[in-house]
Picture 1 (cartoon, rainbow, N blue to C red):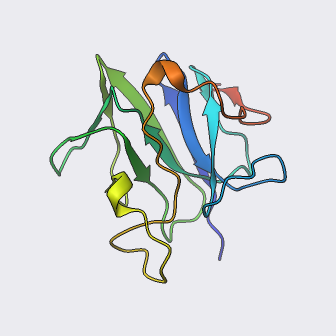
Picture 2 (picture 1 turned 90 degrees about the vertical axis):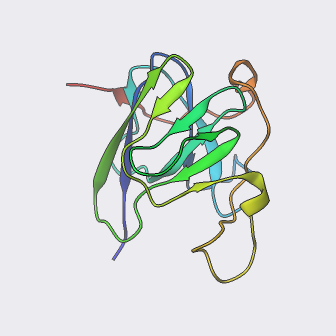
Length: 143
């Protein structure tokens, strides 16, 4: 059973999201980073696995303590066709319930992905996010 996650960017600023690698994204991890403009969402069939929180932002969680970036936030384990909305309050992303917030030290390449993940987590400030491809076919966030 495959999962397809839809990310809705209600932050008012550019957001980096994790998705399936393509021939144009030669990143060396399980997935790749893509730019999702403000007020947009990933299109149907585009599997959004999570988001990147830059070094000058905070991952705000409802249940667990907030984590300062850079971190990767994972969504969608064993859930079919889900969507999640990311909002921003000052420099803090208000994150819906997720499957984990991971620091660069928690990147791994082993078989177990419960305590770590094999994702690229660069150390970039928000103003430095331009070097990634844009999500192809993104749509308005609402409507």
